Image 1 (cartoon, rainbow, N blue to C red):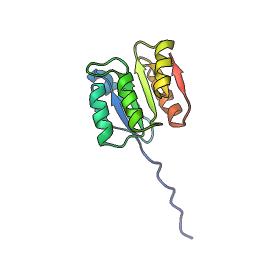
Image 2: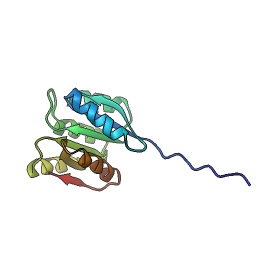
Image 3: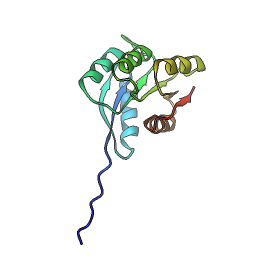
Amino acid sequence: MPETVKPRPQETRILVVDDSDLMRRNLRTVLEAQDHWKVCDEASNGREAVTKFDDEKFDVVVLDFQMPVMDGLEAARQIVGRSPGMPILMVTLHASSQLAEQARQIGIRGVCGKSDIKCVVEGIEAILQDKPYFHA
């Protein structure tokens, strides 16, 4: 009797956006350590993120709040305008309930501190399951 082949789980494609090279590298390392997650591209500011989002298909966006050229809130506003329902996790050193509320109003599904890598992984897992994740 032929053996049934299990379908390979689909790879989750991630866009990482942060103005710090070191933070992008750290996020890539942690995220790609998860089964079936791949950082497909990176951006160093919001404008670059929006451009890359238009050019590629991603399953989730990890987006810094405070960046030059265009901040994370404006980038998220433009990304959600192009792709309503896109799972976006905002990471920040400046988490607050006010930021979380602004993010929620734009359509960002989660906010957490970038210094807590466990929080970033949990946040992505939650928003990929269409659950909110606000740890501000």
